[in-house]
Every structure is written in structure tokens, then in C-alpha cells.
Amino acid sequence: MELSADQARARTRILAALAKAGVDLDLGTVEAEGGRSERLAVLGKAGSGKTLLLSEIVRGLMELGLRPVTGDFESRNTKARTFCVLAPTNKAAGVLRGRGVPATTIHRVLYTPLYHPDYEAIAEWLTGEGERPAADTLSDEALDRAKAFYARHPSIPGALAAAGLRGSDFIKGWKRREQPLDIGLIDEASMLDATQFEDLGQLFSTLVLFGDPAQLAPVGGGGGMVFDAMAEDAKLTLGRVHRQAADNPILDLAHALGDPDLEFEAFEDLIHAAAARDDRVVVAQRADAVAMARAPVLVWRNATRVRLIQGFRAVHGAPSHDLIPGEPLICDGIELPLRHRRKRMDLEARGLIKGAQAIYLGPGRKPGFSRLHLPGSEEGDLSVASIIQIEVPGAEEPIIPTAASMGVLFLHGAAVTIHKAQGSQWPEVQVFAPDLFAAARAGRVEAGIALWKRLAYVAITRAEHRLHWVTRYMLSRPTEPLGTDDLVRNAPILALEAEG
Image (cartoon, rainbow, N blue to C red; front, top):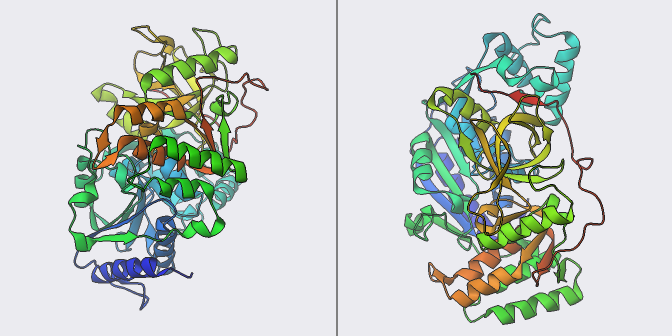
């Protein structure tokens, strides 16, 4: 792979740190134990080649035989050198997995699964570390289904689900990881808070962060990011815009925001000019109600978010006190008592962490349960005890169409704040310009940069292929009914029920 000069310098520095840890990618040698630990940060704006460099490092580690730790299943072979590619959210990890990088979430590695002995041999066989087990626990046909699934999606829980098992059949529980890990590569590091960074520092002997300093700092972080406090010689900056060769107008706009003299009105002029010459940028007077079902409108203010959600539900004919299949949701946390700590870990490990997206499929078999689809999840659909809240403009209390006594909290997901969208990407993104104009008028500054510029940067770089710049408080009528026929379903529903 041909790297630019700045990528090559960063790669050389990373390889030197790995060599100190006993993994020499240049010589192709791996020592049995790690050496001196080091902390590095690779920083660059969108399109600077961070993911390309991360993928190159991962490819080299896998070619040397290092085993990726994904949190699905860990062999008892403790002598093997390992590495982890982590992201703060399931959506961000899914973006990396879509590019061939074996990534998982920080939650999923901080807590490790305890497998039932009857199924541990199957897991070792699937990962290539054991012989095909005798067909005592599962039939030969079920084993073949599990093997075929794992070949397409390297997920042990997903493969066992394809064989007809539920998570409660083969996972006895979850525990906080006690044993340290080897090499950690952390994507979207701008989203890390101080506690997560400290936990990762205690867990990994070698840690390399990949982050974008132009994004929004974590809420409650004082406007700073964890890599700000690192030594200057430990920060590797990528300056060249590699995807610029594709003449990407979205990235052109993102990098234009780096001009300290740029005002909001001038930036909108740039957007209109880009839309006039390239269909990858669209200026629209109305938000598209059909697109909101799968990719939320990005806003700054909560009041705007609530009004857009109500408009979305109204134009789709959703009843005020109930949900219809196809409505989007956002996980807002998990409420379970301490005695159900195991169940909480199980839900988080399956991707139901704060900020995760879900699509409502319908009511579950039990009162208070909902059937959900997790976009990008390797394990298909879920049935969970749910507390779903739909906020109403001007009302003190939200409407709650379904509520278990304890379970997963959800908000409606037709619109989300830009802060919550950080780490996610969608093929097409709608950005609500009136909110960014309000941020510009407020005159707020974060870490020396106008807040509206950070908001605009994060919002427009969530778009993979097309950016829609919505200029007015208006919503289009849908051209098709809301439904679930467009969802990619790859595994049976797994019922996740709390005892008692």
C-alpha cells in the first residue's frame, strides 16, 4: 500500500513502538512477551488517512499471527500475542468492520463472556483453534450452519444463534476483565472521556489512539480531549487530505471550516456553490420524512429534535400513544437493579449501549417487551424489556407507549443531536441548518474554535456519500409508508429476558 509522507512517518513511529513491545512488523518477528509500553496518538481531520493507516497496521499484525480480541470468545491459549481494535460506540465499530477491520466496542472488551463448557469446544473450532466437536450438543447440520455463518460474519454468538441457540444457552455470565491485554488500537478517540482512557491505559501495555481534534469534545470533558494532555512527541499529525483525489465536495466543505475568518453566511455560500456543481451536496428546504426513518436529522438543540420527531410521527400517521413497525429508536441507557448486573453486561455486549440505534419491529411476547432490529449488528434481532419515551413539545412528561418495570431506555431516533451522532456514519445525512445558524448567533467558543464550526464539521462528516443541507423548519410528506421490508435480517430473534 502506498502511503503519503505524513502517513509513512506516523507508521514508522507506530512500528517503533510495536517493536519495543516485541512485535516487529519490519522484520516479521514476534517475541513471546511484550516489552516496554508506550502511548501514541494519530491525529487528523476527516480524509487525512487515519483509517487507512489503522487498517495497514492491523493487516500487518494479522499477517504476523497476532490474534484479534473481539470480546466474542477468548481461547485459553494465553501464550498467543493479541491486539484489539476498539471504538467507543457499536456504530463506530461497525463502520470499521465494514472496511474489514475486526473492531469491537470498549464495553465488549472491558467485560468478558463466560462460556458454558459444552459450547467452548464449538467456539474453539469456529476460531480455528480446535477440532470439529462431536455432534453431541449440536447436530452436524447445526454445526455446518454455525460454520457457514462464522465464515461470513466472524461472530461466535452470531454463529451459535444461527445454529439455533440463544445467548443464555452458551454464555453463563459476564465479568469485568482482570487479565491485561496486549496491543490496543482505539478509533474515534476524540469521544473518550478521562475514565475510559484511564481504564484502557490500565488494560493495554501498548496503546495507539486515532482521533480527530476538530470534532466535539466529550460532554463534561471541559472542552478538551484525552490526547490533548499527551506529550507533543507522542502525537502524530496527518495533514494531507487523501480522499481529496476523489474530488469529494463534502470533505472540501469540512476542511473549509478550518479557516478562522470564515463566517456562517460565507459557509452557506460555499454549500450552495458545491450543490450547484455536484449532486453529492443537496440544498433542501424541507427535511425528508422517508430518509429520517433510517438516518436521523442532525440538530444542535433538543427543542428542535423534539419538534422534528413529532413532525415525523405525524406525517407517517403514527398514533400518539403507540409505535408502528419501522420507527427508529436510540438507546438512552439500561435500568436494571444490581442483582441483574449479568443481564446488563449481556445487553451491552450485544450492542445495546447508550447511543445505539434500533428499529422497532413490534411488541414482544411479554408485556413491556419490544422486538427490535439493531442496524449493523452481527447478531440479528432482539426482544428486550423496554421503556420507550416519546417527547412532546411543551409537555413536562414524555409519552411512554411501552414500559417494563426495568429494562432498556429508548428515545425516538428520527432526529438526534450532533453530539450523539459523533462516531456514526450514514450513506446520506440531513443537517438542520437553522440550528447551526442559532449556534453561530450565540457566539460560543469551544477550545478556541467557534462552536458552530465544530458542530458543522461533525455533522457533515457523518455523510459517507451525500449531504443534505436543510434550510427551513419544514418537513416533506412521505412518498411511501413506514415499514421494515428494507432491513437486512441475518439471524433469528434472541430473547433477552431478565429473571424475576
